[in-house]
Length: 128
Image 1: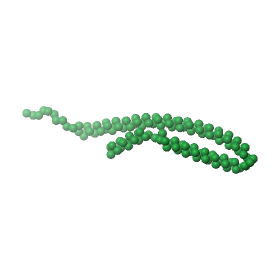
Image 2 (image 1 turned 30 degrees about the horizontal axis):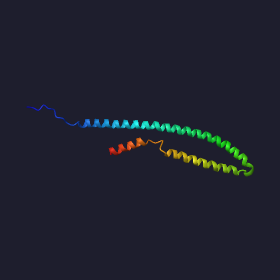
Image 3 (image 1 turned 45 degrees about the vertical axis):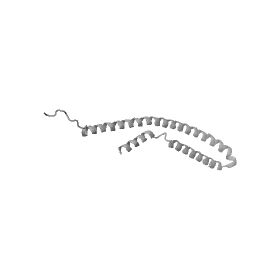
Image 4 (image 1 turned 180 degrees about the vertical axis):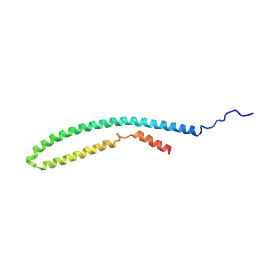
């Protein structure tokens, strides 16, 4: 009598490749979703940083203009041109302090994608 029971084979090469493609696609979609979520947070931080920066620039220009005019007018009789050099050095020091503050804000990592990068690193390590 002939055996009519079908033999069960593995999913085969095509089935394995299809499953792998589905898993890779699912992984890719989840990483894109995570990146989109972090991007919205970064966008909010960038907008807040830009608003603060714009207000600081406007206020600084007014303060610099009025303050410089007042100081130069008051000190011109006693110091002459030297007051202009002193004002220059003061402005250079303030500019350096503001630049260091901006760099510190950027180094806090609020404009990075820490979770996405960590997950991508984990995926790379798992696949290799």
